[in-house]
Image: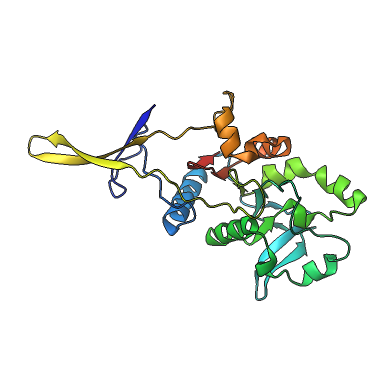
Length: 256
């Protein structure tokens, strides 16, 4: 078993302390976790290979800045920032899809109470970081139109590559599970002498199993706990993304 050492959250450890890890918040959907995500994004904005000011929107996106809630909107000819969701549909398929029958209705408004929890969680985060548009495959592609599905699926690479941020519901087996996780591991705190007349609070906790090393083979345990890792489509989405926030079973992580 490996252990990690972390300082208190309020302690400024500086940029050079790469081997000291911040304690993760106990809830990945908390305001503290959202602030951490915003901080990661601010740092990432300084990376030349990651940051994109504006890009051409996908054919359809969800406008999250509507008085009625959200609605499906054409993105053709528009340039702006947008986010995309990477998620598992589950064995029963998506609980809510855009079809030819409800397309006009979705262009008018989509009742957020009808959305699965994973979608609602993603919308909450995207609104927090100030992005207006969100792309979700099951709702932005007309699912019972073979022609539309073939045309839009061919654009998947550019959709995920150009997204301002990809939100990955890594631990969710279907849309009803949600993105956010309550982490069961609570770190123990011990006081160790740092100076002759003082102490420093050190947190000692079991190191969570990381799965984000693209050069390593994923363990069976990590795959079982994080169903998104087993999906080929989602592997493509992950590798193509400029930056991605993943909500895993044991940790909240950032890739860019």
